[in-house]
Image (cartoon, rainbow, N blue to C red):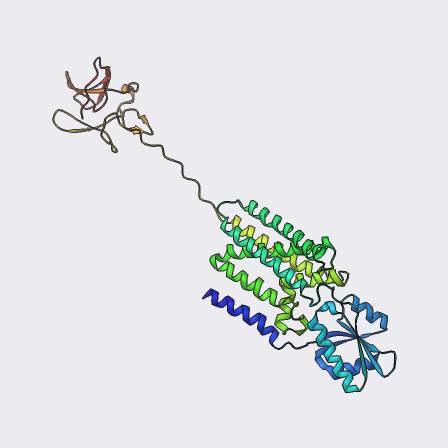
Length: 406
């Protein structure tokens, strides 16, 4: 059942969101109050028109990712010029170009399109940031699964150290491959590694936290949350401006979406809006770590059981697990006054403290009456005189060892 839920959610999110993307309030800077009014009236809620005081102000807004395109009057009064930023993603750029082209055609004006912030030559489809984020998220998820299996072998602080060290290492390795080695992500190396390390930490600690709180259901929940919902709404394959309202909200809150925006910001837009995605990643990593520590510290470990010593074997060859019994002359059982206690003989229970003699070492034998000696079963060497009143008397040395009774 859980597998069916996961595959249904995966297919629904990835294919469902790409099925019919619709532009919703795509930010476009327009120069000139009259042109801005006309564009807003013609395109409605599909675009969010930002009136720019000048062409240079509109261009700065495009370079800092405040808008995804700039519409201005062309060199000739009859024409229009549209400056786009291909680094915002092909789906977003294609959508805004299609909308403005339709407006220009309806107004009977010629349109010139220029890509001001193009994608890197080794990232022609603009998907390098998405696959980089997906791979790091998957690595953190897989690490957390392994750490869950090591819970009985590693202390909590060792598990935390392992996940933190792995997050840092994965960020450094992934940034090196995507940047200097393949040249697909033009971001500075150390800032890119920092973003990816935060993403790996957020994925690992979140997965471990969910597994700790929900048990066996934690891993499927993490799969749905991070790998399915998080990556499908990240805005790389389908721009966030083309997603439904709920998916746009999730894109801003989930670690994969935050990482994709941060990678794009530091790669093409001078890190203008990188603080908000970084804050999202830090909150996920730190929050899940705190929740995991609180949950784990609240669990008490049972005190170890003190090992019991092995029973000392009796001198005879029979197995005597209970109290030692001695047979008197009239066939009555008399309890052994010297039971075993962890390999030692306990003092005999004498009723009168003033007559208590010193403990007698074994082997020994009992003497009943005046001259009747009952040998102890399996021991010899000391005689114990028992008086007819039943009280314990004096211990006397047995000059001859008593013979063994089987």
